[in-house]
Each structure stands twice: as C-alpha cells, then as structure tokens.
Amino acid sequence: MSGWNRREFLIASALAGAPAAAGPRIGLVRSTHARLPRPASLGDPLDYERVRDMVWQAIEHGAPRAGSLEAKIRPGSWVVVKPNMGLLRPQPGYRTGDITDLRVTRAVVEYLARRSSARRITIAEGGSYRNTLDTTQDNVVLQDGRRADLPRFDWGPDEFPGTAGSIGDLIREMQGGFPDKNSITST
Image (cartoon, rainbow, N blue to C red; front, side, top):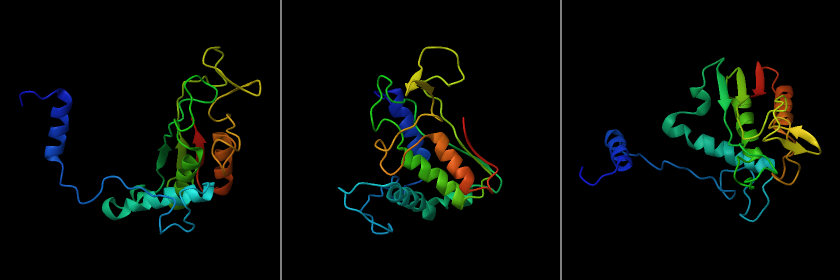
C-alpha cells in the first residue's frame, strides 16, 4: 500500500468488493438512436418531444440490468427529482449548459407521472438565489424588473428549444395533466 494516496485507496477498496461489471456502466442515447420514435441527425434541433424520447429511452436502458425504474417505486411513494439549477440568468457565473436542461427535467417528471405509482413528485432545488419571499437583498435575481426564483423564473423560448416558461409552469401543467397524483410540487 506504500505510495497510495487516500483517494486511490478508497477507490481500490470499493472496487475490490464490487462484482465484476456485466456490461457498460453508462449508457448514451443519441438523437440518432434506432429505437427512438423520431430519430434525428446530430445537427437537427431537439424539440421537447425528441428530448423526452431520448430521456425515456435512457431510463429504459437501465431496466434489463437493475429492473425498471417504475418497478422500484412503491405505490404511494414520494419521489424527489433534484435537477442541477443552482444558478439563474443573469447571475455571474451562469452559462448555458451549466444547469440541467429544462426539457430533461420535464421529461423525468412526466415519465414518473405517467409510468410510476408514485403519489407525490417534488422538484427540489436550492440555488444561489433568494426565494421571492426572502426580504434579504443580496443574491436576488430580477426578471422584467421583478424578483424571480426557480419556480417563477421564465426561461423563455430560446434557452431550451421546444420548452418555455418556468418550473412553476411545468408543475401546473403536470398537476393538470395528472390529477391522480396527490401532488406535483417544487421546493
């Protein structure tokens, strides 16, 4: 063990007890994937439906090895989706691609609403911006002269082609489309 650093030791220890891999650990679904309902060339723009199909195909790739996602969710469960949306435009440091694409978040929530027996679905995110109810004045995001936070921030039609609006809009749409779910909310 001489010459190993802590990280190398921990990785080697974890791998020593792990079963041999039966296949790839990471699966990629490109827009050209043959099982997609509407495959697209790599240069074609991706609307929400195409992104949704890619996300759902990626989720379903996990089923043969580990069992389907919906089978792992017990009836009546509360499922939390944690996208990476820690920054909002125009915060310093925000760059397109640094946060989870709104189309991907929407596709995951829709998949859970349609195919799982979860009773509650929550989008949970804590960002580096103030909630609109917080009276503190630092880390405030303004949009059209008003304070905005993740549920209220309107991404517009250009950031994520084929999907516009806010997380709040997404939640209201899912609540209306899936009234059998106890609640679809955000924190």
